Length: 175
Image 1 (tube, rainbow, N blue to C red):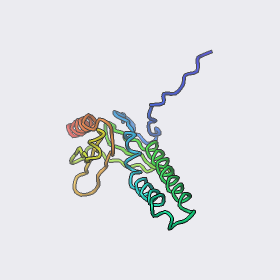
Image 2 (cartoon, one colour):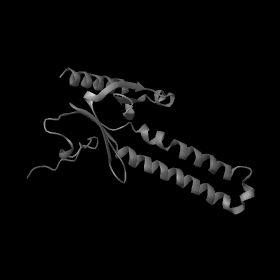
Image 3 (tube, rainbow, N blue to C red):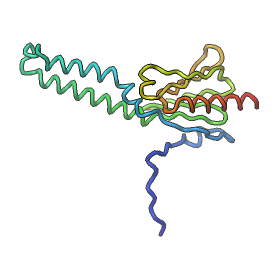
Image 4 (cartoon, one colour):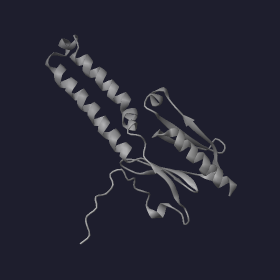
């Protein structure tokens, strides 16, 4: 009897076979950095923290006995947003094939965005101050004209990923 092999927890599922065309090869399949969770949740968590602190501050007697339950509700809201951010992170995959760049994302329904590499006019590496502090970045693929762009947000090792995307675009253009 063959031994049972545990699945790799770090493995990233590749899109269903019907998503890829014949002869298309996946060159890169990644998730955003786990910092993605903090970045997409930051506004709500910050607002909930401020509201909770206001409820518990010296002015709390205005709210009477409702101050503590209100603060706990704010904390619960912050936790719920972080949990939803984790679901968003788990449901986001960036793929680079020999023909196109693809972004799969969505918790309740999957959104598939793609950009053929032959239509990529520019690849940019964007670093916000908050991203630089934790060494993540956004790789932005822009289509010819002002049609569309495909951001790969909050990726780890953004310079390496940027170089891989640029090489793939050059290869596709050269034929």
